[in-house]
Image 1 (cartoon, rainbow, N blue to C red):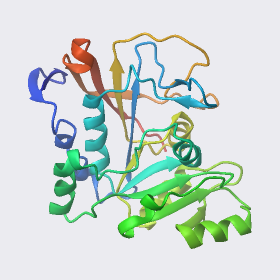
Image 2: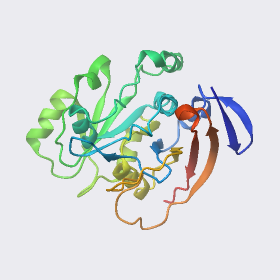
Image 3: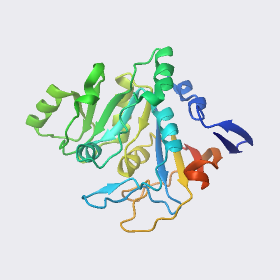
Image 4: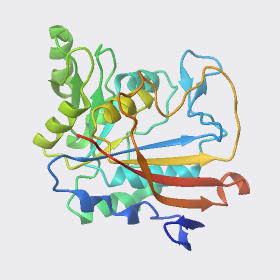
Length: 274
């Protein structure tokens, strides 16, 4: 189970621990948290397609794969905090979403042990971004002392705020009409979070980029063309005021993925302008 590195140098590496060896914990201790995101997409850039019998999108089954999932878990294992969204929790409750907020799967016991040997909690805490606060909070998210924090906009419904805080944890206002990536990142730092992993969708990526707080983007590109409408890409939202530069950090070819079809594993350092 090896992959071939193509950039910045050539060589063969095991798939297991490939992203763990990126050593993201080296970025702990900075003024703001190191924030990174991850997506898997088709060759024509699709990260989701319409669910066949329910409203809303779903990750395509012919794009998702176990080798990419291992790397997803390695990125999650290094985080203090995982970003999600109210939309994701609604999809999860409706059975339309991958279980991305748990990193305690027995097949990844080595990653749990990796965290414990470094003095980290068994699982990262969870941050939920939502304007409407209309989402359920599964009990599994708050089990074993796991902290849940919610970021929302000004003037939230006080009744719903009280319900959420009684059930899950703290709620913070970080923006007027939309969540501010900059305000959110600053508050994350004040709360003690140093490594933050965005497992959320394209709108959350937009607010992180617009706020100038995303440090690295991981992208798995599967060698399949899907087509279809509507088109769902890694980034959704208004045109960014300033184009964001992404400099290639690593590039691997994973030839064994999807029964030999193969996929590319890319990571980019984001040029943050403040």
